[in-house]
Amino acid sequence: MTNLQKYASRSVKRTSHRTFQARVVIECMGMLGLLCGTVCAADSIDLDVNTPAIERLKAASAGRAELVAQNKDYGYVGEGQDGLLKVRTLVGIKLSEKKSVEDLVEAENTDRRALYRELLNAHKLGESEAGKVMGLAAARRRKEAAPGHWVERLSDGKWALARDLKE
Image (cartoon, rainbow, N blue to C red; front, side):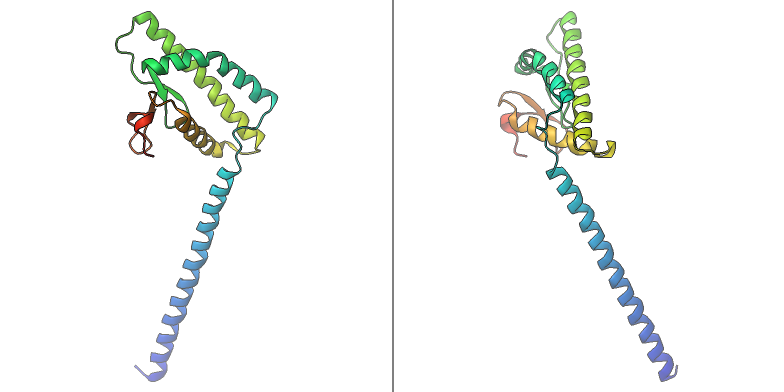
């Protein structure tokens, strides 16, 4: 190999290495921008925003709040990691009461899903952002859960008492 060929070979390697480095830097900057956009978007979602539709949904949920709290006290239902109310156990209750607990959970979750959609609309966000809204709502519900109420752990989805959470 002549000196010219060696130089040309090193020059190509340097150029391709520099090009590779530049591409990596550009891709990393893009990923950081996406990450920042995701975090910034989550920070800008106000769960307390009010519209007439949101107020109606909150009122409907408030009408069930006492019954939901009683079922949480008994340990039959708990807060899911996805921002929805979930049946935890129905052991020890009558068949007729099981149906009313399941109906309560279904009614509450129907309104919660509608609330999350209305929050997306209020913030002019697409359906692809629903997970962020639900995640923020779930985090708030976990934080506000009474110590004796059950919540799903984020780490493994298993049930834990709110007082025992370290997340």
